[in-house]
Image (cartoon, rainbow, N blue to C red; front, side):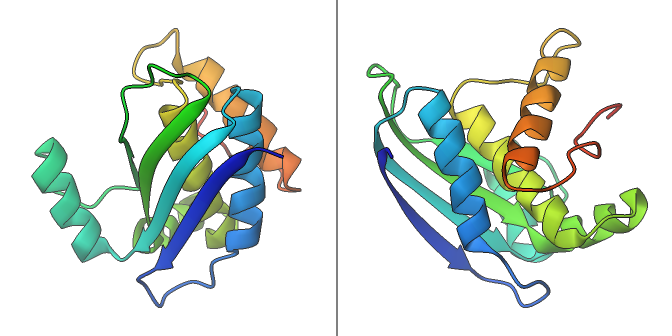
Length: 153
């Protein structure tokens, strides 16, 4: 098992968050990426604080599902420090649309953020299918049917 430390914070009251399952998925992502040390902080927020962070850091005037911030320059690919913020309100909204549990949607956001931190991207038509396949892989790793993923988005 890698030596990455995790710090979790739950700043919302909408969902019961399974941080153990999230940590299993994130630890697998980091191990597969060759990360052996570092620290990941993950916070679960409601829409209003997520909206404020999205405006402050990206200039987007709306709450979003997930934001991931690398805190190091990745000059050492075996070490990673980063923050991931995920939004419970957005998870509930999209879970209804995709007809699956909001807890799975929230897990997907955590996985998505971690994949960004280790170098995956979904902003081009070439990169998106690769990242979505990885999302499905890690959802399934923790026992969630990964067919929802983000295909088609």
